[in-house]
Length: 68
Image (cartoon, rainbow, N blue to C red):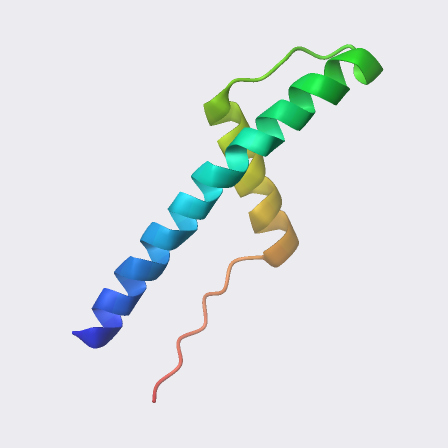
C-alpha cells in the first residue's frame, strides 16, 4: 500500500512540476523562436507537450522494476 501511495504521489508531483515549468517554456519560446526562425507562437498545452517530450528524450523512460 505504501509503494502505491508513493507511486501516485510521485506521478502527481511530476505532472505538477511539468505544469509549472510549461509557463517559462511557453514564454521563452514565444519570446525567442518567432523572431529567430519565423515559427509561430505556442499555447500552454503545446509548451507542456514540448517540455514532456524533451524530458523523455533527455532522461529516457525507466522501465526497470526493483524488489526490496
